[in-house]
Image (cartoon, rainbow over all chains, first blue to last red; front, side, top):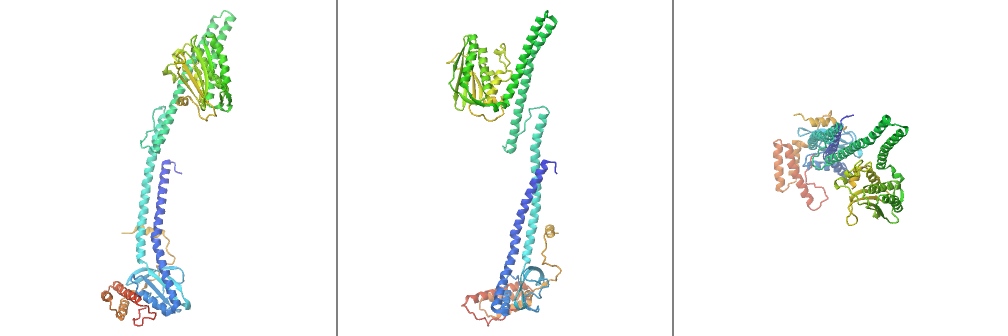
Length: 469
Length: 105
């Protein structure tokens, strides 16, 4: 077994090339030298048939006369005849004696003859006649033999040439293969070494190798983006969780050293537990987003009517908005049907409403609306808050992202990430944009689109969401 | 120079079972000076007035006399073919041509 793939390809190429060329050469041989052989045999048979007819018409004298005529007018000087009687004596023809090797009728014989002092080759055939007479008909095939030898030489040299070309072609194929594999291998080794920047070089010819290099490079780009995302999330987790954990530790330490009573100690422990509950909530949110992105909840999809669902949410958050001096209006048709996960959609819209209430100033208005648009449902939450700067909007749905204006408000930075994951699960998208000044004062409009039918099974991820947007 | 491809070919190609190199070659009697003289005599006996036939006859005889038997025979055979065609071109005569001299063999 050859352990080199490039050598295997080269051997395969060379073998196929040599085999096809050999088949061509054999066909050429059959179509040239073979035809010559068949022509001679056909001429002998036709000649013999005519002579036998003469025998039938006029007996021995007619046959003898015909043989004499044939020999006399044989301008090509290649005819061979012999008629012998039952005793083996020559009756007519130009052979000095009956060849000993020719013993049976039917087959063709190749024998040596002497013609004008020079040796030559002849192909003959015996035909039995009544009365013990035997007729030998043949042709001098020296010219044909010479031609066949010439053809044979030419074809054999062709075979050698083809073998050489097959070897050279195999060598070129092997080099091409090795060069391509070496390029990919070098890139892979560099990446395995920790450097994610190298890419497979393209020749610019746009061939299959270029397309493969492009696919590999695209894959590497995606891996690099994912790695960046993982790094950012890791940093964010470390940063955002350090604060509550540190706070809880400080409270416990302070209580242990300075608590004057059991009640103070208990209160400190309860505050620390609350801090740690926040940490747990963050982890739960992260796990939930990961679960949504994995698409595992698709099996729970069912018919959902968003009309009543949005009305319920409006009622629930309307009270909260009122407490903060805000006005929440609802603009939703009675029925908005889709196939999806009711609980997740409810959670996503709740997150949007929660954000709108959290960032709106007293007196502000919030509008929750929903409508059908083709194969999608569009749910909008518009507020009159400070909005999100354009530069931050593309990152607003990243995990743990918190804009400057959100630094002083409670939250984990996972709310919009979950909304986006829900949108992707339903083959939709989350778009954040500035509200239309004609409708409301300056603020943020969060548009959640969800596909109404069964979503296509795709792997959801933050990158995919960005691409969709 | 040794013909290696032909040798290689002879090694790999099966030889005809009917061919034997052990048999001595058989002489052919239609390439001899004697046959040449017999053909010339047969042509002469036909008394052809055709100049082409006479020319080929003279050339054939001369070549045979010089030892170029096969070349001489080729000319004499061509003369015979011309005579034969001339004969076939004449009105059909089913009776054998008794005026012609007998052909050899």
